[in-house]
Image (cartoon, rainbow, N blue to C red; front, side, top):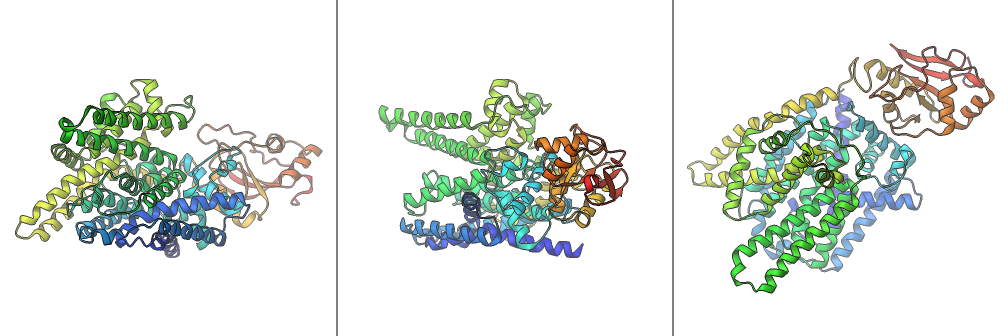
Length: 639
């Protein structure tokens, strides 16, 4: 176990380097001499884009995804990006306004460190061991997809779906990074996934939120700090993505979104500017950030578009309040048309890219009143009321409304309304329109609601910490206040974390894969030679065998489409051998059968091998009712 935790530390270190080195190198080459903290916030967004694009390029030229090819390609893309930014004559942010960077930014990183430490501690507490994995439907796909990239050398977002026998785009950045961690360190796929997720929730997310809050309110010394701490206080993110579905690409997309939003707001001058960066370089950085979001998960990219539209409307309203009487009719009309165009374009994109509207709606069982109550009390997911966070949000909302600082409020209102309409579904057509890009899943919207909630709450806490400067011992008072708040803030997380902790364990009666079945799967590594395929009959938790052992299996996922040859073997392996069966075995390379003698999640079991296919198979590993059988029919394997 000590060795496993040592491997975990190594894998986390590699993940940190993957997220921060390529993007940071591009910014350094551009002579963008920003404070170190800004590199920390922005680099992961750029690095994600570089790795995702590199995987697509390597797939196109048929070069396998390996440490050498991936790192060489990513470094080349990083230098290309840095050179392009430099050629656009980006001006140093620090040179433009050196004193402004020192107002609150170092404190923001301290807050991010505290928030990240809390999140990582909770996550590690939920892990029974570093190699644990969640007993969920989606985990099977994500872990197997990492193994698929490792074994096939193809990490392209354009081809990853082929693992299930389908085709089309699938966000592959998370899987590409996970595969590199496996290839670079030799750790197991589940351990690599846990290390990668630990970095996402413990570093990228709190740093991004602290950076976003600081960028919105640079006059405050403590708002960035408050956002970093409060990033660990929202039940709907990040842990909702663990105890509902194991939505790892979504986890990455939402974590990258705050920093990408800062890039977008700066590009279009929607937040106070303290630099004179060229428009060309700003647009290029934004474009790369958008690619990164899209390859992490398209939901995050669409959320960025919606947030930018909200910022445009907020700025228009603020300007109208200050200057309406002094504006000409033409200017008023132009402002109105601008907002209509922005929201019209967003609506067009939203309705175009959403999946098939015939997909099933994930039923929440919530009434409109209940969904609204969850929003107001920040109880999404775990069901526990985040009382202190909600009080901060109420106070912060009132203060922001009073100073006519509308962007966080409009963003919260849009996201909260979308959540209520999709979760409660009072009007099905509206619910499908708004929720389509989220696969009709209200949980994904709940996670996005964490961003404006943290911002608004952080403003209230930050103002309070600022006010403590007038006390006799401000440092002591702030330290005591924050330390007293932390246990109260994380309490609502614990009920959800209990479920996460449970889902990572393997029991005798687990839904997906049970303890005796894990014993047989573990034996596969020693029993099954590389190159031999293992057929899973019936489809059950054995689908995890691919990720856990690296041995080829059929199916590799619940949605896998059998070939006619594989179907013939499944239907006839328990019958006397025939020339057709022998030919099918020869063509398919199927040499072993993994029989758990049960069904998972209502999946049809296919043939039953209770009798062991006595004349065709030989039991080589067994635990309880779970068996691994070697095919001995047609002269294969010997008796």
